[in-house]
Image 1 (tube, rainbow, N blue to C red):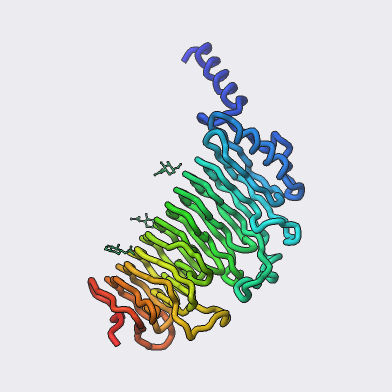
Image 2: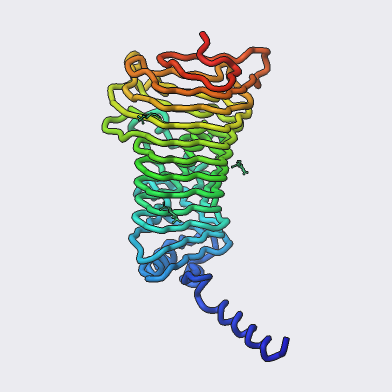
Length: 397
Ligand SMILES: *[C@@H]1O[C@H](CO)[C@@H](O)[C@H](O)[C@H]1NC(C)=O
Ligand SMILES: *[C@@H]1O[C@H](CO)[C@@H](O)[C@H](O)[C@H]1NC(C)=O
Ligand SMILES: *[C@@H]1O[C@H](CO)[C@@H](O)[C@H](O)[C@H]1NC(C)=O
């Protein structure tokens, strides 16, 4: 290669590096807008400034938080934006420890954005260990609502990829009113004794994809509230935690149906529950239908398969009444591994509205407890149909 040609290439590279673009997107590096990487000074102003520039840009743009530790107060990123917008987090964001400083229940919220991407190898550190002792929402209806690490409200066509949420004070992620949102290679990390730290909670959303992700937490890995539609969970590793849950439903009035849930190729390890559908005994009507679980490995899991229509933690309800949530079109197929509780399959359906069209196929579970107990199943108000073999035998007594 001639010297002159080399020079041109060099110049081009220098130009590319100094111009503010990566690929096609305009790049906004927060450290160029005053963000200090000292772990103490909140970078919210730099973030808001870059968000304003990126969100009003008519071409795709990217905000970049490079490696380093940054303190960050409560922030809300609001759309609509003029073009595709991406936030790439490669650093570690640290939440305030003082719960009194929060005005809402979200530390970092994203709302009303179309075509949003959150990417990078960084971490959202919620500093939950300073707040968990104040969390009494699992025991009381009226409680201190602590902030969640991430709120995604009314997003469409969003991708959340690569990042980690650590030690949230409350749920790690709340997905509300979203359409077509994908979590890919997403990580949740909290100790198993942290209260109410659901990994991803979904409500009133249509088209949620959770793929190849890893969730270790103190509450449900994934929980689906009312109005969850077309939710696809694939290749998720869950545990510790309380498993993958639909519900609880029926606690409140005017709940929207849950319909269309596919959980496939997941592994649950050392979780209190496995695959669970839970509804409250109450007079609130509801619908949960078309929920399919297939190809799930259980490793030392309590209650691997559980429909619980008498869900009433901390005696907050009257268990004497039946649930009015109609469960239908459910299948559990190709579920194998070990159960840490003797009752491996429990289908406790409502006496007023028995479960309809439940299919059980290919169950192969063994007991991981220390005694030589054999596994059993318990069924009420349900007559499943079977495909394949079941060990233990399901609903045989
Ligand atoms: C869902 O969103 C992704 C990311 O923006 C996009 O690539 C995909 O086409 C969308 N899917 C549908 C059905 O709109
Ligand atoms: C199943 O999930 C694992 C992650 O737990 C992933 O590595 C693997 O590719 C998935 N297999 C299929 C067939 O989706
Ligand atoms: C249950 O499945 C059947 C047949 O697959 C379908 O006709 C029915 O509409 C489904 N029920 C609900 C509530 O979606």
